[in-house]
Length: 48
Image (tube, rainbow, N blue to C red; front, side, top):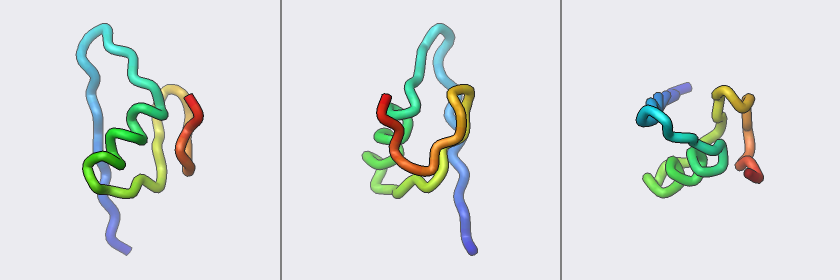
């Protein structure tokens, strides 16, 4: 199975929401299947 990983490094002081990151991937015409970060692991679009 082919997989792709995207690593996001925020600017100093920036706060990234899981939902915002998920939507950013969607806007790049990709379909996220897993989001892993300080707020937890998400396999569906987060609410906030």
